[in-house]
Image (cartoon, rainbow over all chains, first blue to last red; front, side):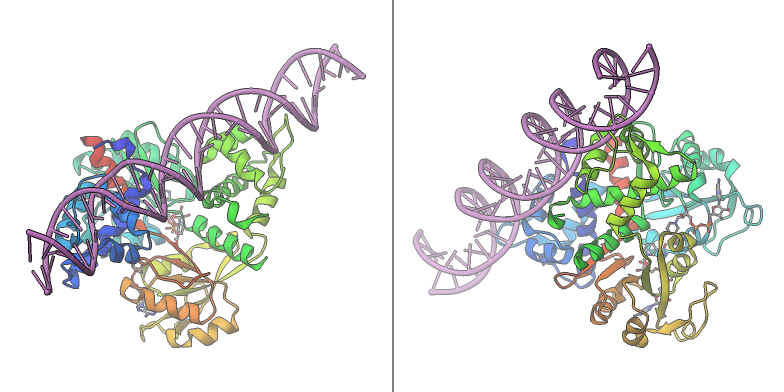
Length: 211
Length: 211
DNA sequence: AATTACTTGTGCAAACAATCACATAGCTGG
DNA sequence: CCAGCTATGTGATTGTTTGCACAAGTAATT
Ligand SMILES: NC(=O)c1ccc[n+]([C@@H]2O[C@H](COP(=O)([O-])OP(=O)(O)OC[C@H]3O[C@@H](n4cnc5c(N)ncnc54)[C@H](O)[C@@H]3O)[C@@H](O)[C@H]2O)c1
Ligand SMILES: NC(=O)c1ccc[n+]([C@@H]2O[C@H](COP(=O)([O-])OP(=O)(O)OC[C@H]3O[C@@H](n4cnc5c(N)ncnc54)[C@H](O)[C@@H]3O)[C@@H](O)[C@H]2O)c1
């Protein structure tokens, strides 16, 4: 299983497949063909088969894929057969929505620590149970609580400094909501969730179409 | 200007360039070379030049790009030289964060109408000024208010139905926050903002790295 | 056992995207 | 006005991703 040979787009699609399969499982669908799964996820059927083929042979020819089994395999591939411990930095409007979101917990992602600088916020307990730590406590808390993933929801101006703090505390993976490109050392990963870029894409398409 | 020949990744990067240039403008930087801009955005310098070359010659050889001028051109390309009118459907945790976010307005994106089904919410006025309409009023309000873009922040179970409503009301472009693939008729666009997919990517990389 | 119907897994070609490398053009200073 | 310097714009090249088309495997039916 060559890590480097797998398209990153494949990983993203695996995530979509996993979600679709989860849904099918709830609907008590036992078997699904690549056609149907592809349609549900908005991709080409051959793409589905090829994506899966990177990791093994999970289907039965002439039949399809067993939903439960395939879901299990995909989750294993993605590393979703365990829980992930996250730290959230910046409890503003967005941060509050994130910690309140119960879907994350269901998917195995848990905010086990939250940080802010605002003295009015530090020390308070959130409805979801976490106490807001001061950002200065980040290094110790991150180690104590065994954090895997850092989530940045601070203003853009503070995001790069926050990333550095997280890296120095030993966190290898960051989910960034601030609208800028975070610079990271080799071997560390950032994923950006970028609302404005998506809106700009829509604006571009609407503009082009009108021409 | 051949719409179809431009890589979609180029459009996404133009959005990043635009943001970086905006920042440089505030720092009173007048001229920037593709090297520097590329570094700021985490891409290859040749990539920057090629992306821009799709739309014209905006630089001066031996010098670089005039920040103000390039920003103007990129904004024109993306359609950011106007205001975009958006409707938000679903005023939950996430929806509230979105309407409260003042950056959108700065960038030219404005929530001019918001909808929900919850009778406790309908009729109330948000701190940002909008009155929450019942979803049944969507068709008329969308027409009255000349909405360009629909934003879905309902539970996943309601997202496809919401998309249909928006499409029927004449909206061509949708930003979807619900964790599922929305099916749209030909010629309509959806962009998904998908937190969990991003987290799954991080989980995968952390898992692989550990092997 | 042979036939039919079906769906996976995959070699290959085509489409798409990123990168290199350099000719080209503008600026500056003498 | 020429030489030297610099950074753009772009043809050529390399690399990556997608999609087609079909051989291979499975099940059901006769
Ligand atoms: N709200 C949205 O819908 C939205 C949309 C797109 C992007 N974003 C981005 O997400 C980020 C957060 O947005 P928001 O609306 O929640 O902003 P916000 O201003 O409501 O919250 C920011 C929070 O970060 C805290 N903070 C500031 N500096 C900090 C530091 N150094 N360490 C720790 N905490 C710090 C502040 O005290 C505040 O609580 C911003 O970068 C924003 O651009 C938000
Ligand atoms: N909160 C987050 O951080 C977060 C993160 C990732 C994804 N999401 C997704 O974003 C969506 C919204 O999340 P949330 O946390 O705000 O949920 P929420 O439950 O807080 O809010 C949903 C809102 O939608 C309204 N609603 C329900 N059906 C509707 C309909 N048919 N028409 C109009 N409004 C309707 C509800 O009344 C409620 O106000 C969900 O799909 C969620 O999975 C949220």
